[in-house]
Image (cartoon, rainbow over all chains, first blue to last red; front, side, top):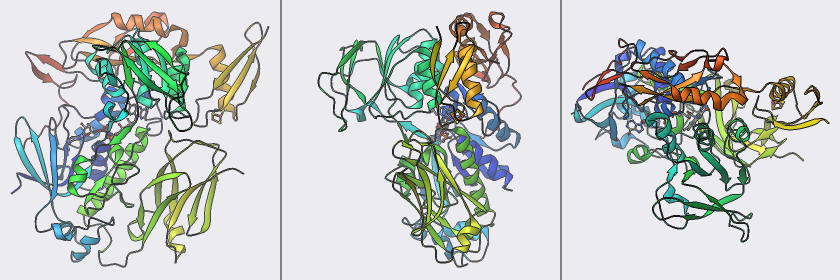
Length: 462
Length: 144
Ligand SMILES: Cc1cc2nc3c(=O)[nH]c(=O)nc-3n(C[C@H](O)[C@H](O)[C@H](O)COP(=O)(O)OP(=O)(O)OC[C@H]3O[C@@H](n4cnc5c(N)ncnc54)[C@H](O)[C@@H]3O)c2cc1C
Ligand code: SF4
């Protein structure tokens, strides 16, 4: 038996979780039927340590810092009195026994829910299988919550240093950029004074500026790829402003020092990404920061049997941002890594709304004929979120988000309906560091009666 | 002697490479490479009077966190960033702190204040008394 029940359980109280919660309530769910579970002692997620400005330009039309942006959403959650359990870590999610057979692990959508009779929310979600969310905290110990729907909003984590394959000892002074950010911005401690940064992801760039302002000397930022994974604005304001060199197609080949980092050697890499002998440069330093990318945090999703994408490491979702497990939704960095928090909020609001519709019985009748149109990624487009659209669940407008795999100048983003070009949009620049989106109209899909698949691709300039 | 500056425009994601030429007096004589008016204004401003927002942290006494994040509540000249940091690092505040609290008025006489960007509650004897500055806006902190 569960210790508590809720209609919508949200795992993670970062910007994604907060926005999903407030949107579910806006859609008509009683706030007391929602529950946010957050393992930290505060809401806001990663934004608490992102003290720089540049958040919310799209949403609030002003430049906020991370904590200020988070507070705007926290306020809504407080005003609506949406219950939150802080200092509470979710350790497992499973489908209630007996209902398990109904869940279809492959193919997104609520196929299994078709078993439910009529357009009734309770029956529908009961047929989806109730979710048992197990969590722990100091006050309540280990407990289980029975939920009709679950929204995954666990964010992402940094690629750990072990995955980086840097030879040599493992002296003190090597941190991921996010860990360093936590030290400086939350704990008020500097991790070091002479710094080399490997990887030009946004967190690394932001930390280059932050540590420089606090009096450290950042010697160089080395990036393995021939382009930066960070936003242009961060390269200009965090590196160029302080004369910090960015060396593209470079990597760390040696770390000197047994107890503490003493020097780091970087070298140029060839097209095969292998170091080119004779190009080594050594920098004396006491700290090496790694900013080598983020991975969605999907251990819980994996255990639950949610189908994950090999490209994003996040769940494969349909137009409602619902995963392969019916009644389980995903949004924010747990779904795919975002660079702009505004898009996180927007996406999460969609997940919250769709979860609300499901529990309120506002979804189309489960036995209505359903057209499912896959959304495919091709030619430079690495993936799309969502990966399929169920036409009768689709809103008037559907945003498709994606990333490209390389830098393209003057190329076009093309939407194909089967093998016909439906729309083509010229882009001055497309880069892996910036998320792209296209918007599809429901009527356009409806008019294309025999449409089998929508493909998003990059067409290079002649 | 004219001065030539190479810039990357950051007004939009395209990031045009802009070249600005100035004469002896620093007057802008030519701007090329921008694709729109926004880029022109950015480039002009960048070479004549570049400004930035500075974000940092300030020590907190008696708070649930040792530091509180702060920002300049307006642009300051780019060249004064490090001076501004020196001033910020001299400041200590007492918890509670709320978003928007001025922790340092008119920094360096630039007409801009340093304001808190986070709420930091009071911590006494290892216990949290108020999570946020104002005290009455506790989360509906539930129990099972
Ligand atoms: C360093 C950095 C700089 C950035 N800079 C910018 C910027 O300048 N402008 C901009 O617009 N965007 C920026 N972003 C992007 C944006 O902030 C993020 O994309 C956004 O915060 C992601 O929100 P989220 O809710 O998905 O994840 P998070 O903020 O990571 O929140 C996830 C939450 O889930 C909780 N959680 C995880 N697992 C569990 C569990 N098992 N049980 C309970 N709780 C759990 C975590 O504690 C966390 O609070 C930046 C991101 C980073 C990391
Ligand atoms: S010049 Fe205009 S188009 Fe080019 S980056 Fe700046 S704002 Fe964008």
